[in-house]
Image 1 (cartoon, rainbow, N blue to C red):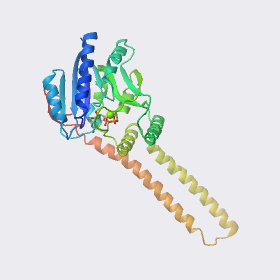
Image 2: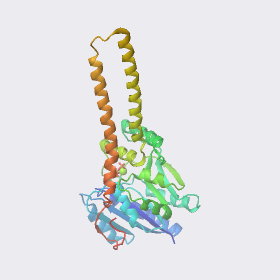
Image 3: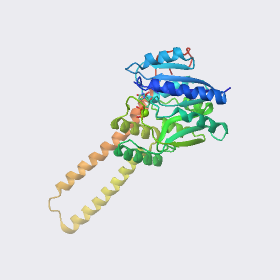
Length: 320
Ligand code: UDP
Ligand code: MG
């Protein structure tokens, strides 16, 4: 009999969780009856400040299929997902949000698709960005165009973190123990054959989104530095270009001085040039700094998450 583990990161989700539990239980009962699979739901409480943990404790007490891992503080969704993936024991593992924006009702179809042996994972992609501010959609589109050009991981526009994977792929992802986690890139990087299921964007059932425009912007920079070193090349390229321009300018000034003498003047253009050079240099140092900071964090080998409390038995792999 196959087991499906469902990993659900939760941060301040007390409003949405009761709806989620009802829906996931319905889907699990249906699938157990239809295809004889068993389930394990791993809720990861990502340092919520509301009643999420109490709810999860209750869920675990009332339904033997449900378990929780509570992190010692808010580590971010990526770390929460990793904690869940590491502790998941199923032959198949699904990751989904707690707000029902990733409809659990798609699970049977996803499971079905993996049975043919043609794919190692089924992922979902929203086809519309309905209900999202246009400016955000615009930046999102630009980001996906850019990162796909400069990175060798295939990152799909509109891809959600809602997917069902076979054990083989889960093990590959768990083996990627990097600190700076950008899961859209990690999924693309490990490869494997993925089937894409498009669906219409659904509004969250209750509670509110944890992503502001600014947070998304920082996240996109993180994605770029984690999966591409092209910006470093841009810095060197700009340097070469500017050297060439400077050389041309020197030639021009020499010729001009020889032909027309050297009346004093031209300090405004000089000031502009100094400013420009200063700007470019700072930009390049900044890019270098981004990568250096990431390297610094990776070399510390800090744990990606720390467990505060869980109803799962202690495992030798926990907490790393
Ligand atoms: N989440 C989390 N830690 C965080 C932020 C979010 O575990 O620091 C979880 C959140 O509880 C939800 C999922 O990640 O289950 C997606 O968050 P949200 O719905 O706010 O994002 P959106 O759907 O708006 O992109
Ligand atoms: Mg959501």
